[in-house]
Image (cartoon, rainbow, N blue to C red; front, side):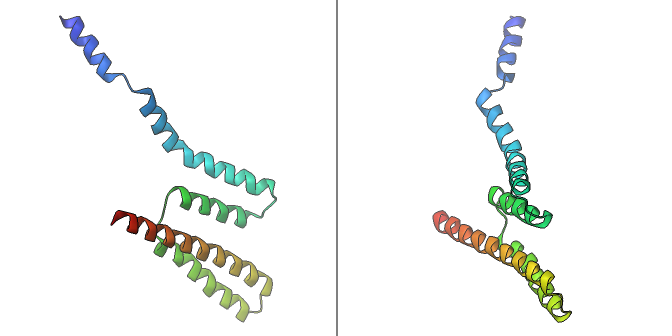
Length: 122
C-alpha cells in the first residue's frame, strides 16, 4: 500500500519532457540569438557600437519593450548630435546621428507592434 503511494507520487513528480524543453528554449533562446547577433556583427567587421546596437535591436525583437522607452535614447542621441555639430565634431556627429536613426527605427517598429497587438486584443 505504501509502495503504491510512493510510486504514484513519483509519477506525479516526473516532469513532462515537452514542458522542460519549452522552458529551456524560452530561457536560453534570447542568449543564443544575442550570441549569434554578436558573432554576425564581428564576422561582418562592424565596430563595437554597431554590434551593440544590433544586439539591442535583436533583444527588443525577442523581448518587446514599450516604444516610449526606446525613444529616449534616440532623443538623447539627437541632442548629442546637435551638441557635437556646435563643437565642430562632424565625423562623430554623423555616427551619432546614424545611431539615433537606429533607435528611431526601433521605436517605430515597436509602435507598429503595439498598435497591432492593441487592435487584435479588442
